[in-house]
Length: 376
Ligand code: HEC
Ligand code: HEC
Image (cartoon, rainbow, N blue to C red; front, side, top):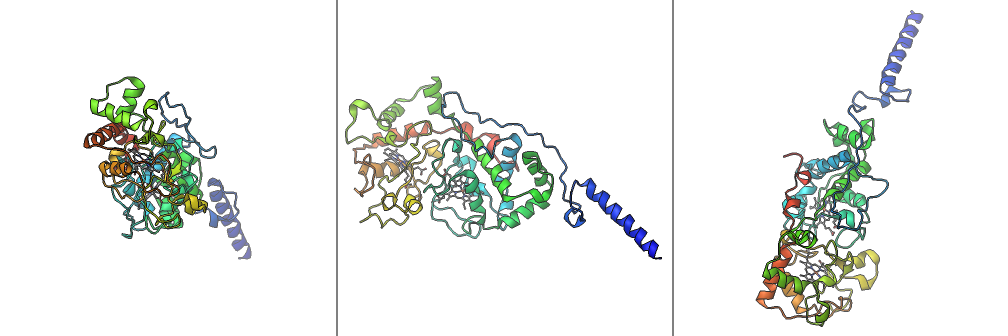
């Protein structure tokens, strides 16, 4: 009888050892190798190359610990569009970053799953591989990887814990395979929030827009500006021999490949008695330097036609309102940039400037199926 039991025990442990061995687990206990743990499916990483035209001289900034792969970008695209990231399964990143609006949401303030409004205007997502100036209107997020951690747990956004997201992803039919294809992991319990945000960041870096009418005319001599656009262009870009205090001078700040100097500045929106009185301190809250209060990221003007309303707090509904603001020349607040000065603006000049800015719209970008939802 005794021998019977120990024989049975030996038999049992052999069976258990074999089943563990099959799953490539070095543990001697099978508590750690449940049936669903290993992931089948291929891991054949293929480099993803950002497809920027040759006239873009700057190289994309890709962190060495998160090289882009085709499968990584694809996983990121799934996660970006999947409401699995939200507590009640109703919202994804794309709810506030919609492709047809150059990845903004068209609202003054974004509303999260609980119906609570945030306090800033959603930002467009494109050419993000070309800046390391800090993300968010106030530059508070140092990298796309770090940024992508935040919306999930923000109660005014997706309001979900990463722990839950990771367990939903591990139990999902498709995601374990996508994670394996992207990162070569072998078991479902190797899915982490760190890998999820790496994939999202890879997808975000793939969102490239360099094919606006403006680009085609300037870079390839493909087409012509209309007369109105030409007048607008000359107002936007400062002509050296007409430099005086009364030009719009937009290109002092909205300049270069992405029509931004990548700096944080005060463009004269708020009339405050002193620098501590801004409702939103912007960069100042990040640096704790009073002189940075009220400074915000100089946004790219690419696709500006599609990203209304405007400014960090979405205060202007239209580009007309934006131009009227600039023409009044700010409020003389101490840290306003010197290029914020009043200038004359006729109705025709206003519409010329807007016509010109509309040439920054890249319709091939917002219609690119590679950037659209994989679920539709
Ligand atoms: C509820 C709406 C909402 C959701 C959901 C949301 N965002 Fe945002 N996003 C915003 C707002 C608003 C800002 C600007 C916030 C600020 O400056 O404080 C922003 C800013 C960003 C930026 C900074 C861009 C730049 O140029 O600095 C990135 C990147 C970004 N979001 C990516 C994501 C990703 C990835 C997700 C999903 C994991 C996501 N967002 C989900 C509203 C949202
Ligand atoms: C001194 C630098 C500076 C100059 C000059 C300047 N801007 Fe801006 N611009 C900014 C900053 C900074 C912001 C963001 C401010 C904020 O949201 O608080 C901005 C925001 C904008 C926005 C809103 C973008 C968005 O995504 O919401 C538009 C449109 C714009 N500027 C157009 C212009 C035009 C047109 C001119 C010329 C008439 C101009 N700017 C001149 C710095 C400047």
